[in-house]
Length: 161
Image 1 (tube, rainbow, N blue to C red):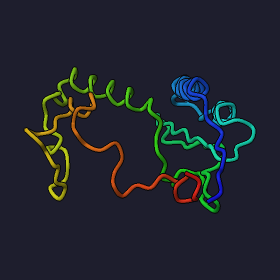
Image 2: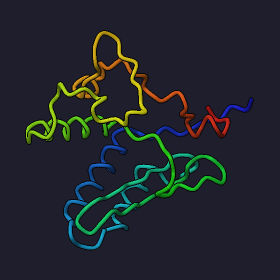
Image 3: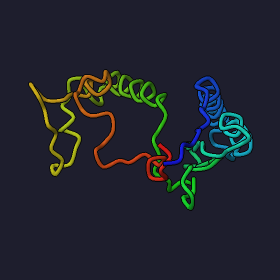
Image 4: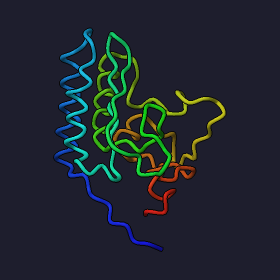
C-alpha cells in the first residue's frame, strides 16, 4: 500500500474561516449572498494546494439556502458540492448544543426528552439503563458510537487512510 502524506488543516484556520463565513452570512441576511468573500475565507483555510482538503459553507437566511465550496473532496471523480456527503467539523457540536439550549429556553423541548420521541418509529435505539435523552446527546453520554457503522470516510474509499 502506498503511503500518502495528507496535509493537516490547522484548527485555528478552520475556526477563523468558519466564524468569518458565519459573520459574513449574518451581515448579509436579506441581501445577496457574499459568495466571493466566503470563498476567499475557505481558500485561506484549505490552503493554496487544495490537494485533499476542501470545505463547504452553507448559509441559510431569509433569501434561502446558499452553498459555497472550495477545494477537493479528496476522492477522484467525486465533486465537492452541495450534494456531497461529508463529515462535519467538531465546531458543530457546540453550535448544536447552543441551539438545543435555546429550544429548551423557549419551551420547545426539554433536556430530559427521550430522543426516541423525535425519531421515526422504524428506528430502534439500543438503550442501556434508560432512554437516551437530548441532554445525553448534547453531553456525549448517550453511549452511541461516534460514527454510524455504515459510514466510510472518503479518504478510506480512496485508499488514503
